[in-house]
Image (cartoon, rainbow, N blue to C red):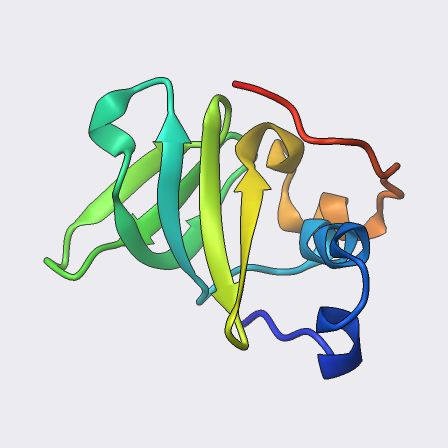
Length: 110
């Protein structure tokens, strides 16, 4: 489950993004905000499995949806703070991401 320290949420958005890149998102509620495939947009569910290239979400309808990370943007809410996650930045396993050092850059387009 994702949890960020309260002081982290009041600091710069770049710091929050950097913390999210290293976070284990299992159990978080993700929503597909943008995707090259329009049928994925609007899909919301609880993240149950994360693989190198896909997220597996359980929707309210109890359906398992497999959403590719590449070319998708997800939103996640943590303690009332909504952040966007660029799936191409997450194209690693959670365990590999937590050990990697990321550089802060601006946003990127699909």
